[in-house]
Image (cartoon, rainbow, N blue to C red; front, side, top):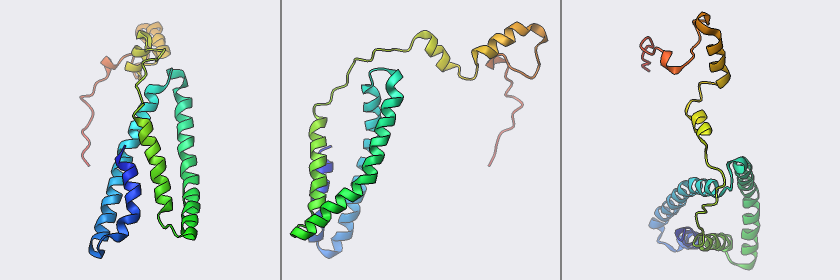
Length: 173
């Protein structure tokens, strides 16, 4: 997390590199930023999921997080462009990058105080675990097959054990 603010503070100074190294410096900065994005988004999703107090509110929390991320993507360029324009007016070409670096530094400082809470109030019961393990067998279909007895339709399966995969042809692209 500490590298991200340093990257934002350093980008305006890439112009000071010798001309033959500027392109390399830009590529290194872009690759570093992309790498941190690839690591950060799944990590944030995991932290958000673990911080949810209950599975019942997890959908709402993920929806609000996705909406907030979309708002940041929508308004971020406008705000950053305005800061960049202000910086050009006052003669400070890297003002937008430094403002982004300050925001990243605040986020990096906050990350030192993050803790994994153990306040999850719901744990999967045996019924929920059983339902998660057998998603192809709906309880009403199993009950109907048991009630039908020996005269049930031959083209339906009451369990996965009756499925014969030996007749399936191998797919070769």
